[in-house]
Image (cartoon, rainbow, N blue to C red):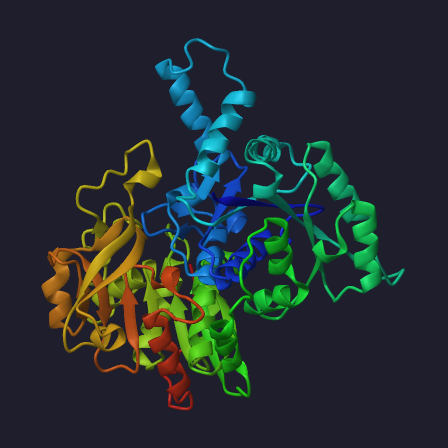
Length: 541
């Protein structure tokens, strides 16, 4: 039967439960086990689709079209397992399902309560994802002590009661802070966190100690003693420069061995040859590439998490160091672009920052700076080209200008934005793209048909297709029925490629997304000393 591992967090949020869960999945998979990861999110939103990226970070998209927490991106990138809709569970989705059942009379007039009805639905979601895998790792979002996570903790406790101690274990991630004035590492927060977890009927089997440095054996022994956890089950997880070093650190700390012993898995030693070989690509690398992400969610890297990671993967493959620049599309000097080796304009929604992106793309196009546009980035590139090359000065998107006379970007056919469920109005999940021969896109992918993940409502308006093509814009990727534009490019440019889909979601550290890989390859070869057009004007929304 499937073994269950629940990962909880204590003291503060943002400790890295997601990276811990992903790293554990990586290590157990390297032992020959089949693994699946899951995230239980305590917020009442049904999904993150309509949540502010400044608060929530990126919305990750699965193969089957679920919009999920960004931690699912970490799970996929560390394990290589493509997750499904059931890998992300929210309080909102739980309550919606229970209320729907109550309205239909499924509870036969019973009083509907948190226990057992909410907890039973949570348990159903937890058990429904495993599909006979060897190990399921379920991360419980939030922090122990938060009222929102109590039903999830109770459901997890009941699952251990139901399946037995030998089949269920709890991993608790907590903080050991260093207090500067006293020059001491403090274990009291961890002790308090574990005590609170026990008050809910859960005793952790293994504790992961997050810290800004390596911990002494004395600290680990203290936690072992006062939290009643075996010493070999106290794992130190210090801050590291590269998140992809975490599995190797966890290996050294014996995380996978402790789990193997606790759950009686009896697996062979892990084989991390492939992972270590991948990480060795960093050795001796000295060349830098200056890459900018020009976006509207300025100041919160989590808003573009998968884009950043895809850039890292491509840089690793091309043996260059990523020097990442953040440019606020709302307010920047065009001169900032002149010293860059490449610019990414990522996805997003809404009008804010659009005119800044369009002005930047014009400069990039004219000055032969490698450009990668994703989703909204493609749409802005089309608008810029229509205005400044085709001569359609008022070209726009109907998303930004409802009454535009020239909506070169328009709403998808058969989409209804008046739906009560806004998220349902998007094109979500994996769709095929036909790659046109004799294009840069064909060089990038090497296949006639590719499958990539989507999250958008608007598309290139086919009414303007001939005019755009006649002026030199190449439609290098289309839907198999030739109705939807999937990729665009320019021929006489070092690298000017954009996609309506999101290639970053499928990028892996050992297998970079082809578009990102080609973009970085072009960026590292660009000569930034070439003459640029003089335009130092201030760009504002």
